[in-house]
Every structure is written in C-alpha cells, then in structure tokens.
Image 1 (tube, helix red, strand yellow):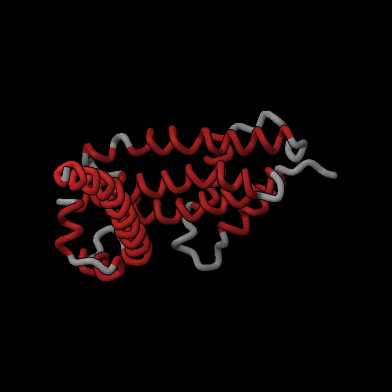
Image 2 (image 1 turned 90 degrees about the vertical axis):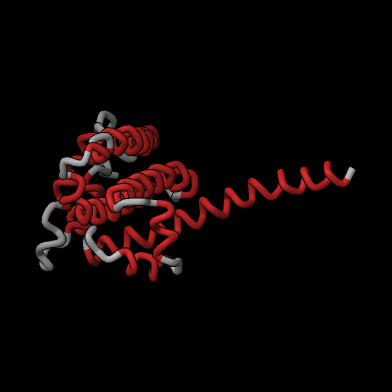
Length: 198
C-alpha cells in the first residue's frame, strides 16, 4: 500500500519538475537573447549565466556548445512571437490593434535576429533549418491577424503576410548601425497605412 502511494506521489511530482525545468530553460534563453542583443553572440557564457541567475555549468548542461545555444534562442524567440498572435487577437481592442502589437513584437524579434545574423549565415548545418522554421511558425500567425482585420473591415483583403513581414524586415535593416534611424516609427507608419480610411 505504501509502495503504491509513493508511486503516485512520484508521478504527481514529475509533471511539476518538467514544468519547472521548462520555465528555467525559458529564463535562460531570455537571458541569452538579451545578452546577444547587447554584446553579440560571442558574449562570454558567464555573462549569460549571471543574467539568468544560474551557474555556467547549467548552461553547458543544456547547451554543450555555442551553436546549440544560438539555435535554441532563435527558436525560443520565434515560438514566443508565434504564440503571442492568438493572445493579442483575443485581448486586443480591434484586430488592427492586435496586428500593430504583434508587428511591434516582430520588430523586437528582428532586432535580436540581427544580433544573431553572423552566426545564422555561418556554415553550421544546424542553422540551415532555422529560416524554414521562422516562415512556418510566423507567416500563418501574421496571416490570421491580417484576415481578422480584413474581416472587420479595417484593412483591405488580399494583403499577403509574407510580403508584409518582408517589408517590415527590410525597414529594420541597418537600424542597429544608425542611431538617427527609427525603424519602429517607420514600421508604425506602414501598419497605420494598411488601415482603410473611415
């Protein structure tokens, strides 16, 4: 009888441990992304560990080499951006407002992506699938937001998600090299310009 009770306790504890592990890994990836933006992908692992509040060994246990960490950061940020779309659509004042908020998140992602650009264009085979992952996860979310805004009569129908995302990406190029260039303001003008006149 005691054995069965111990087994049930262990089974209940396992999902809790997995949830804690996922949360800890997410904290670590958020910290790495922030350090990459400010210091580049070659930043010392100890800086990432300090920001995450963990030991250096914890990072190496999860990510044996830097390429593994860079890929995980990229995928984590894509996932966060993708998952935000439906939430913004459900909570936004209007579909167009949700689209604007999501595009702001996408711009934040692109800033981090530019911090990873050199690594992502390297010859490491692990990076090859990342662009397809980016497209597969984010284009459908943007498309859903555009469709909702079009159905609400806020924008014209027929705006392609991929085309809009490419346009936003192009507006963000060079933003990190020129302090006088405000990519976010220009992206805001682009999204405002999608609205139909009242």
